[in-house]
Image 1: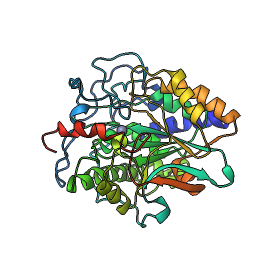
Image 2: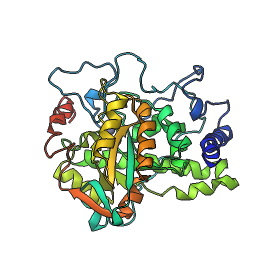
Image 3: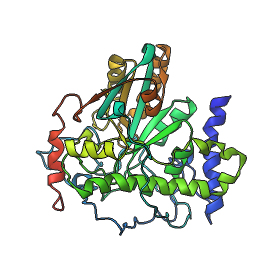
Image 4: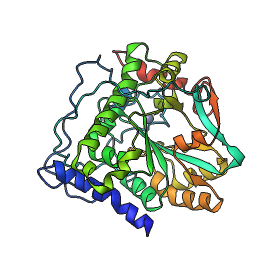
Length: 374
Ligand SMILES: [Zn+2]
């Protein structure tokens, strides 16, 4: 069966890649939730010295107390104070012994962003009212933390052949190298830019905005180079690599928050700013699978863009997916990546960024204000 073959393909691909590069056996993606503890965890993140330092995001600190006045962020979620059952937290894994990630120059889309993609894209009106839907999952990671990876969620998408888009932070990519490579190499999925360290681009100004965007582009480019230089790229299976674009062309603002300046900067860099029309609310600890599926199934329209999380902080997202996918397919919906969706309908964009209505994410401004380097 094709789904079964596909399920194993990323593992085989990854295994090949890692075996070709690692001195010791490593743990492949599909077993990450059950594997024994490795001898060491992921490598320390080395700062990039050629660009200005990026202020850390204070709320992203593991275990840092949250001021009572700061609202819960439904778009990133908080680091649990201690490990708790729930979304699959990333197990420590032994990283592939791939030398250092090469630093490359900025990799931006070569072409100017088409006028129809300017602005903050909330959904699409598909031509002929085709029942298309884009599932999107953010892979957020702040400056002083290591986020996780929801293997159950990703493996479900693979077994059911559900196309989806992942908005990955550059630092998330660096701290999850094998997951990044496997997601990139999987033709089911598309990757988008979610800044370097989840900076609030509604608050940040000037060069740091460019830096947040550009570092994630560069990180992606480095991983792409690794894939294309790997032994895997010389095998017949490597045909799948042809789908991997040279540069990321989609962008998602952390907290769903932008300023006029940063929205213009993203678009000027050739990136389409993708928001959403349906919020799952999965970072809220009290969220349930039932409420997530109801939120989606009650609001779904042809061309909907759904936001959820796959960084180990989407609560019960993986548990909600089977009911959502089954029901939407029953209703005739086709799951597509965001780029596919953009190409198959009329884009609906706003001139500002918001969660469900204009101005509702200004409450996250204070998250960056707590950062003295801002
Ligand atoms: Zn995020």
